[in-house]
Image (cartoon, rainbow, N blue to C red; front, side, top):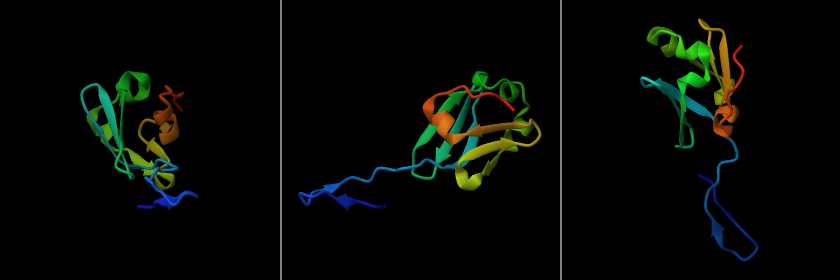
Length: 94
């Protein structure tokens, strides 16, 4: 964890500058992404037609790529960025 002091000498709390995925799990209607900084993102599967129509086995074959910046499902030809999920964007499939 990193903290920094401002010019007055007060220590500011840690603020992450980037978000990286650590793992992905699924509920009946939601995708849950655990981030390396301790936060989590949950988004509706209906935002992503390829994922919402996939089997649980296909969903579980998610690969975290680029050091955590993206998610990839090779069986479904689906790629999502963590930045897009944080922004709340229903990204284009493919």
